[in-house]
Each structure stands twice: as structure tokens, then as C-alpha cells.
Image (cartoon, rainbow, N blue to C red; front, side):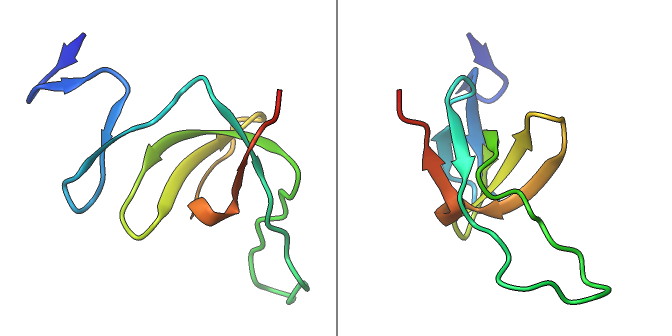
Amino acid sequence: MVLGRGRAEGETVSASGSTGHAEPNREYIYAWGPRYHVPGLPVLDRKGQRCRVLARGAMNSALVEFRDGEVAVISRNALRRVRP
């Protein structure tokens, strides 16, 4: 199915304008964890949790949604594929 401007369903557009295919059914594991906690600074402490990629962005970033519904922008270097 084609959605506006000739893009296919499931296809995303990064900030730089390039297109990529997000795989909505593929789950990943968030592999990064904090080295230490600094009081007063927010920390994404999600190491080992499963998430799915909603969109890929410029500079190797990704918008992901965790199983509990929380959405975050992270580095794609922090994602690992789930092994079957």
C-alpha cells in the first residue's frame, strides 16, 4: 500500500530526507545500561528489555517503543536483534 508521496507502508523518512524500512514486527533488545547514576539527571535504565523500532532517524538514531509503552529516542548502536 502506498501512502502519500509514493512511500510504502512501513517506510520511514529520516531528518535528512532519506528513506529506510522500519521493520515493525521485529523486536530488538536494548543493550546499553548506565555506568553510574548522577542524582538529578534522567537515566534510561532499560538494559536487556525488548523494544521495537518505530522510526529511524539521522545520525544513527531510532525512535523505539518498549513493551510497557514508553517511547524513547536512542542510538541504534544500542540495539541488538533478538535471536530465535
